[in-house]
Amino acid sequence: MLKEIKVCVDCGKGPISPQKRVLRCKPCSLRERFKDPRNHPMYGKKHTKAASEKWSKDRRGKGNSMYGKHQSKTAREKIGVANRGEKSGKWKGGRPRCPWCGKQIGYASKGCYSCVARERFKDPTKNPMYGRTHSKEACRRIGEAHRGPKNFNWHGGARQVPYTFEFSKKLKAEIRCRDGYKCVVCGLTEKEHLQLYRRVLIVHHADYRKHNCAKSNLATVCMQCNSRVNFNREKWLRFFKQLVQTNGWL
Image (cartoon, rainbow, N blue to C red; front, side, top):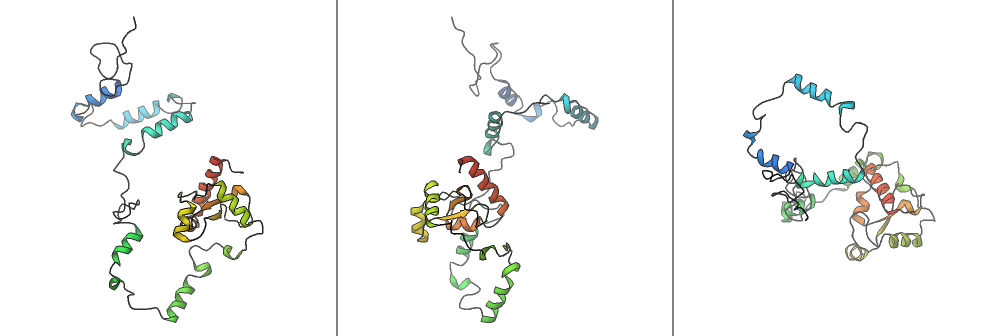
């Protein structure tokens, strides 16, 4: 006759101890026991400095149970999933979202930049430049202040470097086909892109070098993402490198 497997009354995990008085697994038992923090033996107390140093020393180096071992990739993934988002002890509800479009925004922001500007100038008369235009002299000074090396996004005049003959329409069509006619950053399809911008998706050089037309260095992006990837280039270099490794592009 098969023995009945006893499971935890809270989480349903098992098997647990077959003893009658045991109703929960160890994590659930501790959670139930210390639901009221005053039940904890250390409630209102602190470890002495000497005790803390002793425990730290005992668990350092060869005294640590993980000394010379490594978590497997599967174990790391499980730990990550178990402590991500709302499951994390430091979870504070996540980043707030724009009340108009739903995009993630900063903690101190009222909304995303576009929506706040749209709301602010819903009435065009509130715009400080309403009914006014810059003079030719003002336009010239603004242009000079942001031209060439003075521009914060200056990269040594790379924009003036022409594309090579290898970067042909045929090659770009092959890259868009390989990427499923979708932006690899945001997932916008070519059909949606044509409706929004009246042009096909853009093929981007991942390492920002126009002469490197290897297929592993080319990726399909939309107009908006093409502008985004030209800022904070180190971050996007890492992104495209990871993308190449994941998809196995050659």
